[in-house]
Length: 281
Image (tube, rainbow, N blue to C red; front, side):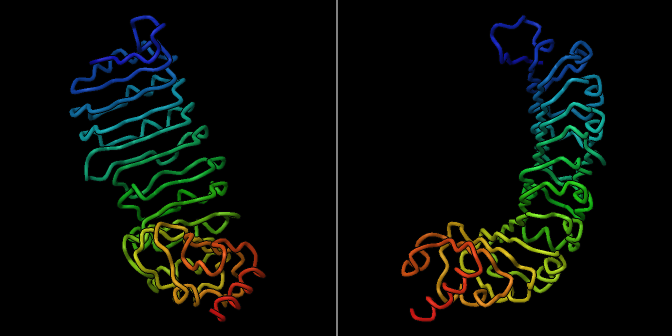
């Protein structure tokens, strides 16, 4: 095991410090028993590490990174680390891993780069952005029912095909659903059906070369649409959504239609005015 010191003024026994790194091929976990006060831990490139049950001893651990440990499949011990706030897991393997069924109530940030069929129940106070674009194999969002303070969920289009049921997100008040289009130009009928079940919808689309917005006219719940990605949209591409009654916010990439003099229209009235402008161009 190699310790990489983070605080030069601390004693030589780094695992008694507030932060420690376990890196490279060997990982002597026996020293974790002397580390009850450890706040931050990074475990990286431990190719043969297959069991992290010893982490249960780290009752004060707040930040944890586990990176490129391909023999490790079971992360369920993390649900017993009740002080955890920030967790990043990059498994380094294609096989599915097992995450906690319920994360500690203290958790406020989670990043997972791995294959798993569920990410575990997140605490009700979990807020901010949740990026699911790096999670493959998801089949359910049931774990998100209680954490309605999340304001943005990023997800790949291909993942929505597998998940299908988006109703666990129905209690979210101000949620943006950010869909990575993966080169596709439009949302399929099945995705539109999944999205239409939500009481209200704020949608961001990215990762397209050209875009067909016509299917969105089947979303009477669409209140906001953000197309502000690297790809400009044309007048013809914008036209289908401008007559949608519920739409209150529209944004697209700067330079898309220069004659409009702007790219953000933040009220229904401004969108109606935009429609009239496009008709005269």
